[in-house]
Every structure is written in C-alpha cells, then in structure tokens.
Length: 229
Image (cartoon, rainbow, N blue to C red):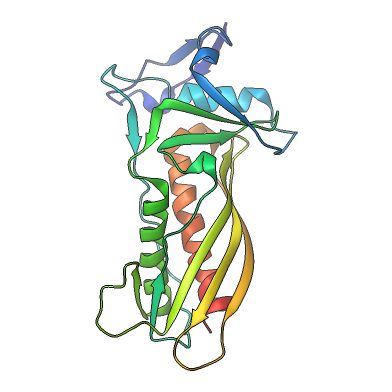
C-alpha cells in the first residue's frame, strides 16, 4: 500500500486527511481510460500516481470541475492589424472533451471521468486566446462569429496538435497557426509553435489549470510577435 501526503488539502472540504492510502492498480486501474501516444519515457510511474491521488478526494457528489484561471498578461506587442477575428481553436481528439488528460511514461494518455474541465476545452481556449491577444496587441479582437459590422483586417486560425500535461510537471502546447489578411496587404502567414510551461505536480489539477492558462498567454504573445506584425 502506498501512502501519499495531503497536507496542502487539510483545510479543504474535499480533503481526505493527512494521507491517502491507494492500492494500485486494483482501485484506480478500472477507472482509467488509456490512449496510446509517445511521450517522455523518463516519467516515473510514481508521478502519475501522485497526480491521481492529489485529486482523488471527492465529496461523493459527482465529478469535480476545474476552471482555468485567467493568466496575467504583461507583454505589449504593437501589430499591423487594427482588428483580428479568431476562428475556433481545434484540439487533438484526447483534449476535445471535458475529461482532464495526463501524459504517462508508457506513452499512454490517462483520463478520469470524475476530474473534468469546467468548460469545453476548445471553447475555453478560444476565448482565453482571444482575451489575451486583445490585451497583448491592443487591437480589436473577437472570436467567430465576428460580432461587428465592419469586417476584420485579419483572421487567425490555430490548430493545436499537442495539448497535454505530463506528470513530471510540464504542460506542452504545440501546433500551427495561420493568419489571413483582408486589408489589401499581402501579409498572409503560417507559423509553427511549441511551448512548454512548468508546473508543480504536487499541486494537482489546479497547478495544471494554471499552467494551461499561462501557455495560452504565451501563445498569444508569440502570435502577436511573429504573426501579426
């Protein structure tokens, strides 16, 4: 039997006490859905188990929902477009549902039906990216459908290929984005991106949520700097 510390949860309504005893794999394995995917082979199995344990205490009233807190935006990047439309972000299959995914050392992706994002990830990432891009650039930025009478000067499409936290403590966000210009200029662009934001695995899902928000802000900064200038 493995004992994992829960000191940071001692004041929570959902706390299990100072320690949580988990029997692996008899208890947790039947509740997991695994999808094969190559990842960091160095990931220790104990890190994945700790992630599950840190979020395993529930009140018995159903799944836990986790919102992504807005990450602070401090960078300011001047751009060449006064208005930008953001098309709905596309995500890999494993990230399209509310179930929170975790990358394992075996190359599998693990999810649990009782640990969920509070909003559909594609919708939430689109809105977060739109907000961050507007703050970074100072331009008029809105997600589709475009809500203003005057057409946008540019349109942004983001296709995410990797959207995954590893239990070692890194949230990875990679893919491509495309900028189409409608202001009469020839400034259409296509760029690849690859971002990695560290987080503390001991922080469980809240730490992953914060890293996801920070990665989205970093993506907005990269798009403003490399795609919209």
